[in-house]
Each structure stands twice: as structure tokens, then as C-alpha cells.
Image (cartoon, rainbow, N blue to C red; front, side, top):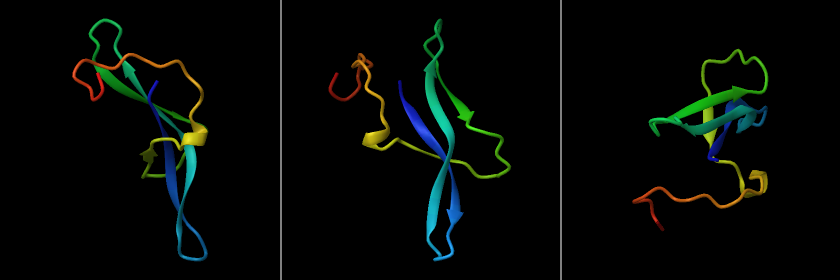
Length: 76
């Protein structure tokens, strides 16, 4: 399952921008048509106007069984 971390930018007192995780974005496929869509699941109500999504770091990815690659995908 493909997912991204959803974060909000937070500027620190040192002027550096850090990113606070507020949820996750998941890639889904419609069971009948195969159409790809995305679901955003927030950890809590967020009162911001800008959300960013990044792939998770290697240490954040849960162990999962390998999945079949889509036809035409690199390495397929």
C-alpha cells in the first residue's frame, strides 16, 4: 500500500522550517474500475490551510509483503 505522511510546516524560533506530521495520505484503487484515488486521514482536526504530503522515511515504512507491479511500471 502506498502512503505519504501529511505534514504542516512550522517555523522554529531559529528561523528553520520543520514539518509536523498531522496524518497520512493513502493511494487506493477502485475495486471495479481500477481507478486510482487518494484518501487523507488526519490524526486530529487540523485548522490550517496548507497540508503537504511526503513519502515516509525508510524507518517509518511497515514491513509488508511485496506487491505486484502495474504493467508498464519500471522493473515490471
